[in-house]
Image (cartoon, rainbow, N blue to C red; front, side, top):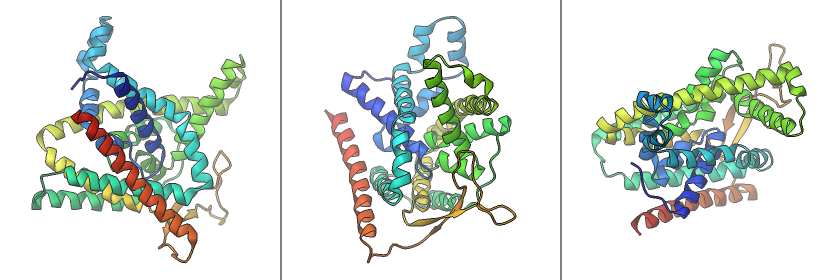
Length: 338
């Protein structure tokens, strides 16, 4: 699966990792879709499969060069670099955009998913009654997940570890949004907002030679949560990649059919026109999380009012999202044939 990569290939791989990281941050959007449409999904899964007992033995024996080659280190390293950059740059911009231009952000992602469905469906040449059945199963599962009721926040470290395993699913299984799963578990704000902000603040303080954070129990707890969540994510990446690699080898067309269905079913999650339903306590008061934000319980979806200019702007963003995905897919295909 390893390839000889030019400098431009390396730059674009970092950008793809950045796009995956940003997509994983948005509820309803799957970073795995980026890998699928950009054409490196199978290489990503098979590279993760190489993180196994043999890789561990190479690490213990100090054979770092052999380990780097064995796990396709250049590919994974550049991709992960992009994801890390994303969490401290694009993710912050996305937080701002969702806060101030929520309708248009959802519309753009809605269009991107439609473009992804069209592109993947056109490339899939194994249509049959059997694969259509798997597509329908994927759609039903995707829609069902989108209407589940979120749970309450829980910072128990064993549960956080489990959240890491399941939350990373968006990177390995296109159409299944890891961030939306975290919302269902009640831990989206804790794991992808509060703990990440705690890490950012801690790094800033360390650079200023300020170690007072060690005396802040709340900060220390958030850092513990982030470490455990990261370990769970790593465990999930490795275990899910082995499972998916096994399935892809034996049931490739059925797996791709389910993925197409999952992506289609996820459209309900990112439907742009929706009102937030906020969580209330037993007395009917709206609940507030640790960051001072109102706790969202679910969404009330509705059809757009076409008499309003905002609806037409949102439709333009949907079209823009479709064109972005198809344009990137065309560019990727064109480069692969040169």
